[in-house]
Amino acid sequence: MAQQIPESLEGLTIAVLGGTGPQGRGLGRRFAAAGLPVVIGSRAADRAEQTAEDLAAATGGTVTGAANEDAAAAGDVVVVAVPYDGHAALLKEVAPALAGKVVVDCVNALGFDKQGAYALPVPEGSAAQQAELLLPDSTVVGAFHHVSAVLLEDPEVTSVDTDVLVLGDVREATTLVQDLAATIPGVRGIYGGRLRNAFQVEALTANLISVNRRYKAHAGLRVTDV
Amino acid sequence: MAQQIPESLEGLTIAVLGGTGPQGRGLGRRFAAAGLPVVIGSRAADRAEQTAEDLAAATGGTVTGAANEDAAAAGDVVVVAVPYDGHAALLKEVAPALAGKVVVDCVNALGFDKQGAYALPVPEGSAAQQAELLLPDSTVVGAFHHVSAVLLEDPEVTSVDTDVLVLGDVREATTLVQDLAATIPGVRGIYGGRLRNAFQVEALTANLISVNRRYKAHAGLRVTDV
Image (cartoon, rainbow over all chains, first blue to last red; front, side):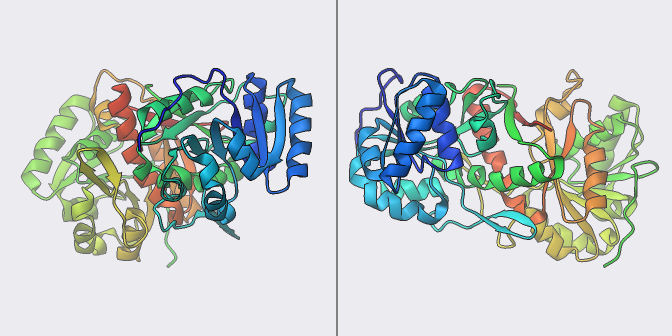
């Protein structure tokens, strides 16, 4: 499917589905602070509107809120930051609104027990590949899996010390999402391979949770020699 | 199985099975340069002896060579750096010699095609968990998956800019292997979670290969906020 991928972020609206959760809210905050128009999506429109109001006040940016499907329709680039639980169901629902767009999947399929976090198997290979299958008319990119929501949401954190691995099969789309990552101060967007190699990037979040526990940290990753 | 884990590297001999391949040879070189006695193991004793001679001359360290089984017997800590292909067969063969020891598995199960590297599924969950199953009398730790063999082998590289994620279920063993990683100048050994979370760390090597291709780099990873 031929699809027009924007060459730059200029003039683009970023929608964040699941934007009232910590990860989505944190990303929305940073994108808004960078001057990008942001639409927060949530299952309940009123919760999305409340979060949007808070983020607009905190950042001075342009942030609105809507139900996920309306947010999906309003965004030029759409970030999916919902729990893995509701991932497939949401994407099926909003697929028509996402047609022709770059969809950025941040979802980590994780389980938790007494020993901490662990990676859940994903039948499609990875959450990003699940999205790819469910959104045949969109261009799916995986990114933002490892960025600490705590750091994103902390107004005192002026620079976030991590790189974002960006995965995808369409170069123009991964480049655009690398640019999106780089709007967060301190962050570099680094191309990290094709979607077929997304699982391990998603699952590595379990390891970072182990690191955080052991070292009382908000760990991130930097790619060296790049 | 109760097992005595050494509290420090002092007086320990490090064996490297598959020590004539780039990764094993690079690790052996760095351990020898750090003053640790090293035994290089290979299928063919004479090839191991040749590599050992080269490494001893290059580092001024104590390096000997032997067939894998003899190297396994000679090591106090045994690093497994063989291709995934021969991993299970080798471990079955040397299991008795590894009993009671800390075994450090560095193996990445990767496939390669025109589009680059990709992670192979491992029936046991990961190469490290495969080792754990085959070595019920050893303590298995996963580590050194991401360290560039090119950098390890380059005598001009005086400091290797990467952290080593160390995975395992026995704290004394992961601590010892963190110390082993830290003998390589520039490297920190960072606890990275339990063995059940080893797969994604092993598989992430495919992504680093993609990074290396795209950026013409020898990429490594640093864990931030630790």
